[in-house]
Length: 203
Image (cartoon, rainbow, N blue to C red; front, side, top):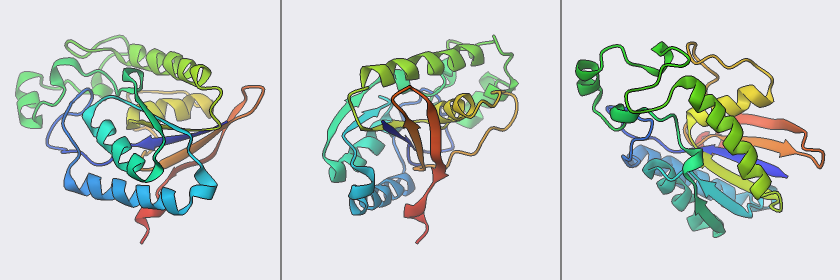
């Protein structure tokens, strides 16, 4: 089984992300269209059978743009959402700094949740648990695409590469619209064939 992890396109960085329902900006839409064309041009390599996407607006838009070229079954699943930042989701950065000074993901205690949201531990455990469930539910799919978020992909890369995840330090870079290919064999062994590539943005 091949699993292609795709990070969504660019959204408006003037606002806090997390569970924000803000859409992609024009730059992000453009990158998604380039990725869609790249996947279509290399269809023999990818052969995507199904897309499962986070149900937040920026991932929905990304997956729908990609599916204009792929034309496969697509499902939206809240289990692929980014970290739940509660009351800060979609809030202007300036407002967030005033209302919740010094409340940032990397500054939280491991068991300290965002106001109205989840803690880093809850986020990590959710991603670990829900990813396994999604893979099991789709084990009949040969080439599965998951359209999700940087935080989710970062946790999965740490788990599968057997690297300790620490929310307080800068993690592995996950570029917008990047592709990370995970291979799962018949014994459920997992390894990355490649990580965080953006060939569609090179020209």
